[in-house]
Length: 498
Image (cartoon, rainbow, N blue to C red; front, side):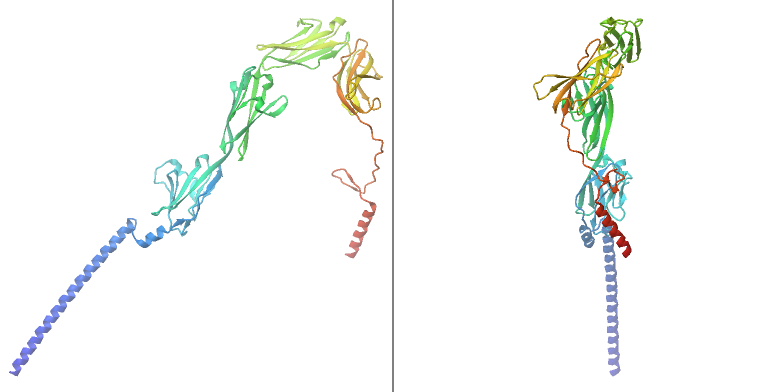
C-alpha cells in the first residue's frame, strides 16, 4: 500500500513537471515571435524615415538647423564702370558651408549653391563665364562688366522661409559719341539753316557743350548763336563766317569725350586786298594784289575806274593763279592813277574790293609807346611836310598841329619815331598823322590815344654789390657784410670744436 501510494505520487509529480515545461516552452516561443514582429516594425519605421529624408525630410532637428540659417548682408546699391570687376556680397550664417544659396536676376537663375546653373536652359546670357562664385564664399563676382549687367540681383537661401537679400547694380560708363552729323553733310549753302546733332551714350546721361573754331579762334556756342535741344544745335541763315570746325564735348562725371566736324558754307566769293591804298609815281611800277576766299571756283577780273581790263592789254601785267591775282601797273601819265577793282564771281554771286593807286603819300601803322608815336610813310615823291594833329581829351576839343622834322635821307619808305614828352603838357590826348609831298597831302590816319605822364625827378636808388647770387633766377640777394662775417666766424669756431 505504501509502495502504491509512492508510485502514484511520483506519477503525478512527473505529469505536473511535464505540463510546466510545456507551458514554459510555449511562452518562450510566443516571446520570440513578439520580438521578431517588433524588429520588423522597427525596420519598417526606419525605412519610412529614410524615405522621408530622401523626399525632403521631416526630421525636426534637421528642419531647425535649416530654418535658423540667415543672411547677414544688408541690401546695397553697387556702382561699377564698364569693363571693371564687381563683387556682390551675400554673407550667410552659419558660415560653415552647410547653407545652400542661389543667385537670381530678373527671375533668371545664375547659380545653385556654388555650381553655375547649366541645367536650366534660360538663355545663353545666364551661362556667361564672366559670372562666378568667389572662393570660400557665397558672393557673386562679375568680371568685364557691361552696360547690360545693370539690374537687381537676389541672393536667396534654399529653406522653407527663403531668406534673401537684393542688390541694385548700376553701371557707369564714360561718354561715347556714337554719331556727330551736320545737315547737308556739312556743306551748306549760304542763307540756309544748319543743324548739328551729337548722339551720345553713357551713364549717367552725359551733358553736351558746343564750340566753333572760325577765323577768330575757338569759342563756345551760346544761346545767341543758335537754338539748343538735348543733343542738337540749330543755326539759322548761315553765311560764310559760319564755316569752320565744330566740336561736340560730352561729359558725365565718369569721363569726357569729344568729336570734331568740319562745316563749309558755300556762297558768293569774298575778295580781300593786301592794301587799300598804294603809292607810286610816273614810270614806277606798282603791284596790286587781291585774293579770294571761296569754296567754289571763281572767275577773277580787274577794272580800272570801272572799265574792264582785258587779259590781252599791254598796259597791264595781269597774273591769276587760283584764288590769288596780281595786277602790275606802270603809270605813264597822271591819268594812269586811279581806282583799280578786283572782282570775283561764281554761280552764287560776285564780290569786289578796290585799291587806290595814288601819288600822294601813304601813312601806315601808327602806334603808341608811352609818349612816343611811330608810323611808316610811303612816297616815291619827295616829302615836304609831316604833321601830328593832337587834341586834349579833357580840353576844349581843338586840334593842335605839331610839325615833325623831315627825314634826312631820301627814300620811298620811311619809319618815323617822334617823342611828344617835351612838346606838350602832361595829360591824355588823341593823335593822328598826315604827310605832304610835292603832289598832295596824304589822308589823315585814324586816331591813337596818348597818355603823357610827368617823368620822375628822383634818381634811381643805388644797388650795392651782392655777395650771393641766385643762378636760377639771375636775381641778386643782398645781405649785410656784418652778418656774413658773423656767420663765417661761427662756422669756423664750430669746425674747431669738432
